Length: 120
Image (cartoon, rainbow, N blue to C red; front, top):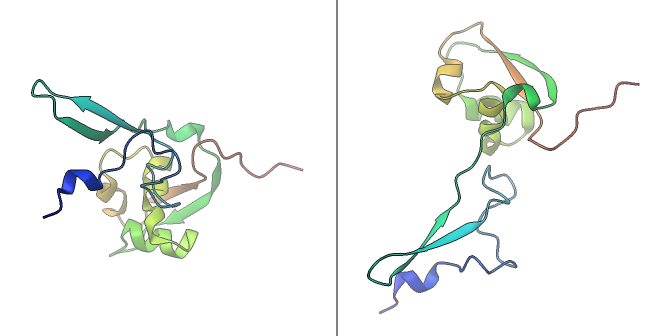
């Protein structure tokens, strides 16, 4: 029988990426904790959510009845997995609340660290 713990990548496995390119956790390292019994546990370092106002704005989206963040991300960014970019850009503690009110305007932003279009 295979021990599932052997399938967990080591934090030192720099060549191995456990996140896909659209993940909000991309670039966040894996860490290890060794408990009192000597067992090693691998975990993800906490992700620091960027301040919404620090993100470069691309535009806005007006919420319609029945909208979901994954659907908005698919229509605006061509990938539903980027729903978290909308949550980050609007400082959401509860992402579902962003689509609760039809007519609300949501900021569409670039990920943290990506500069906005230059003003020419």
